[in-house]
Length: 484
Image (cartoon, rainbow, N blue to C red; front, side, top):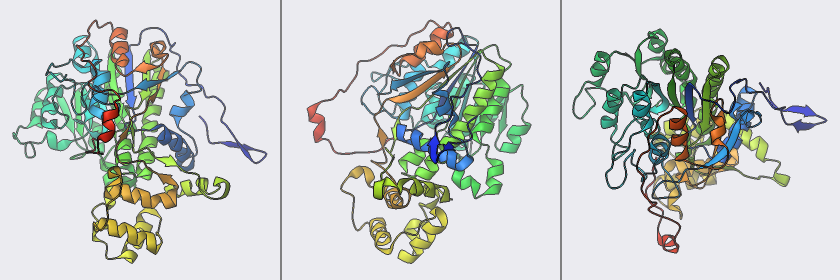
């Protein structure tokens, strides 16, 4: 494993190509399929994530090392949705999950109401075990795209019982409120229903560690999404309650590995949320946590080489970029290193910032939380925005997080295009038996076909024609509502 950039004669040398450790050939049939998603990861986030990983832990992203592994298939994927060049997570995961493009915001359902059958139930009928692991709510768009069918991704209270109906064997993430009788609108006790169906139900990392291996498993470790890693670092008691993505992934594999066949989706979902908030420190920390979950999967693949790993993202979010700063851009690298000084996420600050008592109070808060005391002029301008004295010219930056991201760009050297998703082709790395199918430029819907063909499942969902292509008239539109 690469320990960082070596230095020869005062210049940084690229690491040597690293062997992936997997013995499975790119051809052949996998017994196990693990689909890993770093939700909302732009190419620029990937670039900065590797640099951040070297600063944070002394070695770059394991994912990037795989790009150099001769047995890995590296490609790019068009992730557009049925109605837009820019996808949301629901349409993205549905394209993988059903092989059909759908309208943003919907899960495995065509505009005319036709329901699509996703991978979860299809693979279950074929005798495969299934698992969903995420740092978001377990009912959130990306995990749901593999196992649920609803008109709106917001129907979490409908998605939760669909997992039970399909008997998805392992479910780990947040979203406790959608199972809790006291929180659900229909007052259904889904926890009791899951227990009755043979699931072990856990709510803390300690309970997860003690849970029996030979039972179905439902773990919900927060009422909503799991906290950002940055914030958990400052709260040791909560850190002991909330498992890392790597720990949840390891627990899922323990419960699936005895199966002849399994399909597992692992999502680092809060990379996306860091992007929406224009919070580069939170986003990069989540990407490193995702990379550590990938390492758990690589360890598993070394032991069980009949495993296909597919590592990708669904879209970019926020369009962050490290800018050239200073004479000959010499200040860019030291500014970027300031990200290590962040101790709290923007999300954790969003309730405190509007309550600050003037410029000095803001400087103190940001200094303690983010390692930056902005100059008085910049701090005053930011507070004027918070107090609604001015609005950005570009609507995509009209939010507290977006403007805080712009303010912090002076300290980090990283600026943003908006708090929205971006329409870009995304990276994909496939490793292990079946990886050869992923060679060449891919459409998002191809992933479903690869998985079903590799599993010997002869099924295709109906499709609908694209609802929107590039058109001059679109230039008259204004920037509107953001999707998660």
